[in-house]
Length: 119
Image 1 (tube, one colour):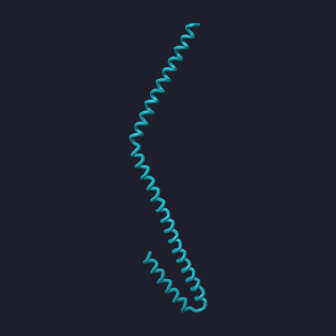
Image 2 (tube, helix red, strand yellow):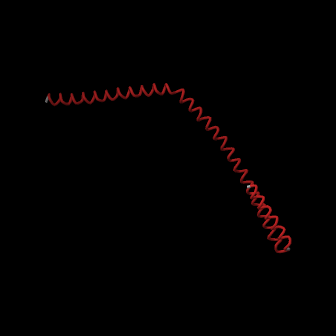
Image 3 (cartoon, one colour):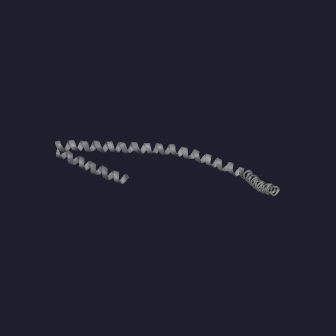
């Protein structure tokens, strides 16, 4: 009976010593990480300030991009309305007088050429 109790006691001591060894290793690792982090703290602060300024720049560029997209959308909308009006005028003039239709076709040809050159 005493041998059984002694065996269990020795096994518990081995487990306890192993756990203590792991706790000491983990403590040393935590202290090492803490010292590394303390040494790197100025670099981390500098990097975070850089990221902060980068976020502000992206915010400004995003606002500029949305304004530019809206401006281009308005330009294309205006060009589309002009083109629809010209073709509507041409459609109505073609039925009434042939000379006016040919003049409008010439104007459209010149407009398309100028749009092609400017693009």
